[in-house]
Image (cartoon, rainbow, N blue to C red):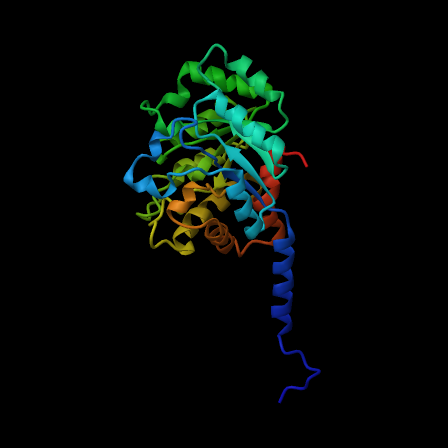
Length: 304
C-alpha cells in the first residue's frame, strides 16, 4: 500500500515531464509559410481537383490563430509568386505583425535589373531572403544557367540568402551551387521533396549528402507530409528522411517549417509540428531548440 508521503510518479517520469516543459518553453520559429488571396496574384496552380481544399484566401489573421494554439512564436513568409508586388504586399503584413519575423521574397535573377531589385528590398529589415520556384521551370537546368548564376552572385555579394525549391531531379545541382557560390547561404526547401509515399531513398539520399558537404547549404524539415500518403501518413513514414538529414546536416543547419497552408492538404498545422517533434524526440533539448529556433534565426538574421 502506498503512503500518502511516497511519490506516486516515478522520479524518471517527473524529470522527463520537466524536460518536456523546458522544451516547450523555448521559442519556436516556423521558417516556411505562405499567404495568398484569390484574385490578387496568379493562383491558377490552385485550379485543380487535388488543390480544391486549399483554394481559398489564407491571410495573417488565419495563421495567427494557429500559431497561438500550437505555441509557435514567429514565422517566416516564403514567396509564392514571381512578382515583385507580392514582396510589397507581404512586407506590409510584416510591418503590421511583430510575429511575422521575415519575408523571403522574389527578384528576377536573370534580369539586368536584379541588383536594383535587391537593393530596393534590402531597405526593409524584414526582407530576409529570395526564392525562385525552380521546380516549376520547364528547363531542369534553369538554376545553373549563366544569367541565373549571375543573379545568384548578386545575392552573394549583398548577403541575401537563397531558398532552393527543388524536386529530387534538381537536387544534384545543389552541391555545384554550394561550391560555385561559397559566400551565398542557401537552404533546401522541403528536403527537395523526396518520394516519401513510395518510401524511396536511393534517388535522393546521395545528392542530399553531397549538398550537405557544402557548409553554406542548409535544409528545411518542411513539406514532408504532402510528399507522403495524404490520408494515411504517420510520423514513422517521415523518420528515415529526417534521420538522413540529421546525419548529413546536423541540427545547426536544419530548421523547422510548416509549409502552411499547403500542409492542409494532408494534415493540420499542429499535426505537422507534432510529427516533427516525434521524429526529433531522441535529440537533446538544446538540439531541438536549434532546429525549432536558432538555425532559422541565424540563417535569416531575424531580429527581435
